[in-house]
Every structure is written in structure tokens, then in C-alpha cells.
Image (tube, rainbow, N blue to C red):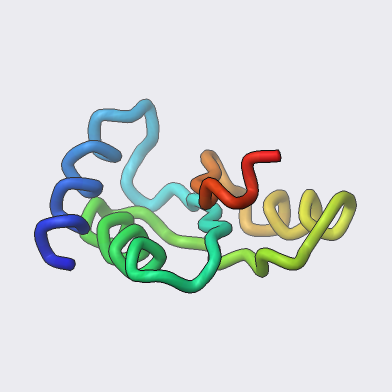
Length: 79
């Protein structure tokens, strides 16, 4: 978990975002969920944990309300 979260933290720091920016995390419960959350925290980002059951307007509202600069989602939600 530590290695995974450190690797993600190093990667996310290379992206065009600033520490303190909010990132939406939309992912089913699994180890990568926790590792991603930890990695974002280690990189200095605020993680907005978004319910995977949200759709359409409610999902858009949640992401906008958290002022998310980016979204990370699980492969199961790619469609």
C-alpha cells in the first residue's frame, strides 16, 4: 500500500495541478481506492470522495461543489 501510494503521489505531482487542489475519486471499494486516496494526500491534494452510485446532474453537482480540478475513476465506471 505504501509503495502504491508513493508511486501515485510521485506521478500526480507531475500533472498540471497545484497542492491543495481538489481531485474527485470515484471508485468501487478495493485496495486501489485506499492507495489512491493516500497517494493524493501524500502529494498534497484534497480528495473529494464521490459516491459511485451518483449519475448525471447529481454527479456533476457533486464534482462542481467540491471544485475538483481532476477526476480519478475506477475502470468499472469508464462507460
